[in-house]
Image (tube, rainbow, N blue to C red; front, side):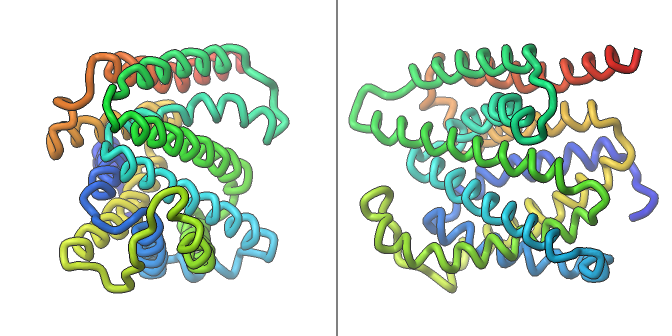
Length: 309
């Protein structure tokens, strides 16, 4: 695919597939630990069939492997808490709204981790995100489901925090490296981490979230959904994204990528009718968070222009 046709379409398709991961996460009956373990080994193996990935391993030194292995552990934690949030709250929309806080965390963490200048305008966006989160919190039910709702928000916010950490690290360490190869290292290391971690969680999880019996061979529909999640919504989606990023500006790419939670919330309404369960407070909060997500790349572009003048 050297000559990429319709890069904007490919980018939107990639983001649509990324957004669909929350839907599949709710459809899959496995607990979050089992789900992510299965996703990581399937997607990790699939990357080895992408041309050029194996050859690029030779260009990775020990430090590269260790760096991307660390990121892989963070990706595993992010996915476990992301799907854990969906399972606990029984809502893809709630988790996706929380995922919008990655903008806030990135604005705070990036200057610290990369030793770059602190941007006050981006910090102001963080305050807007907190306002949105407050409205999402007000949407909690008044019955016995309130505890699950609050816990789902906590897991969703922590998931976004971890995502912001590894996003900044990727941005810092990925230049000059084969992105596909780096991703395969991350997935395999995340899989190995979970292989050691899950037995421990088997003893600890009942005090947090009940850990269902581990299934090496899931049910038929779970296998179908896992293949869709791992091959189409992970490996293929990433190939589409990389192809498109070679032909569109970073600004356009950021705007489109920020549509992921929007696509996901719309799909949650179509597949699960979640719009009938969530109230006005939730949609006010989600709208504020999504607004902040779109403002973020616009401010970055304005700052870049100002610095080049």
